[in-house]
Length: 342
Image 1 (cartoon, rainbow, N blue to C red):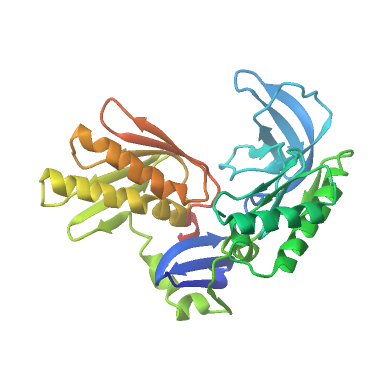
Image 2 (image 1 turned 180 degrees about the horizontal axis):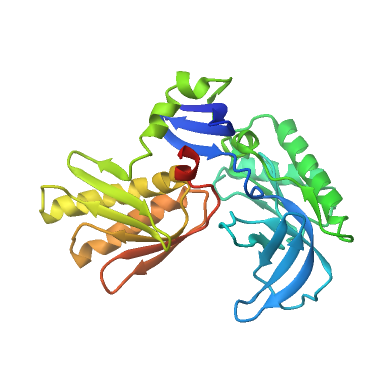
């Protein structure tokens, strides 16, 4: 069983949280004061539709937001929206009108009624007990509820019940604030709150100033300064952001055999989600893989899909190009680590 350590500290004066798994850096969250955090909820005012893009510009207290919806919206009307990604420099903040209120154990969905249990919880007796608890705590509120996979490991149903009530109360309060001028109604979570909410596995928690240095996190972060990622004895991949896309070059090294190429490509597929997560990279990602037979592409795709399935950041596997590259489209949620380290 893997050993996890959660470390709460600061990085270059910014609030930060790190997750270590068996001594390896598995995740890193660093506060970004330049843009509103994902999850922030605004009461916005509809400004104008954007022809040809199927969306609309909105006015928010922090400037301008972009919503991928135009139908049924009238300029001047108020609308509740939630930040869904990180805004690129000089661009509008991406938002959605489908609000989610996330807790450690529960997600309340005001616009999607129904009670649901995470598919990761497979024990039927536990699912039945959680469903009964959900019915009791929601008390007939006209909202949806999703109980997260973290409920399976939590033996204290009272903690789950408190989380359900807290999220439902917040959702009820916010959804009653639909009328008025643009206003920030709920701030998104900072790194420490995110760590508490999302890293629910059994773990040792270290929260003190200077913990990043004493626990070796700074040394692990230094390894992310270079684009090169070692893969086995001789293979490597280079992850290099450009203005247009993220280029990933995979190389098998001195061994040019087909078996070596396939091996290094599969190693790259398994580690790519972690590397993109730690480096805070999103957008278009193009993989230039080591040469391998077309018959091995299916195995590569299934390995890559399995690796991204465990990743929280939305990523679409687009497919192969005529030149034999593989393309991904990854949601931008985090500040690129290179901007922090510089």
